[in-house]
Image (cartoon, rainbow, N blue to C red; front, side, top):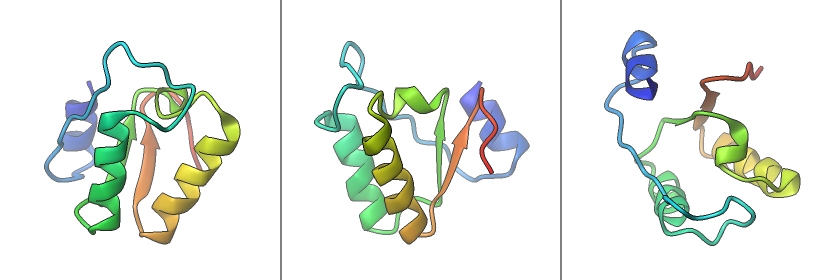
Length: 84
């Protein structure tokens, strides 16, 4: 569904990163760290997630991620939630 969302909104190529079986309680997850590296290197324009708690269950970590994405000009999209 996220790939379809990306196509529908013309967001470019979609790369799926996942940490199956890993809790979103902290940011110490391999795929999330890979995403942050890609963001810092300027390889990401959009981050798509099913729900925001898939990025982090910790609100302060989620705010830090959103701020970091914003500083890099990366748009954050949640498939099931409306973000302004």
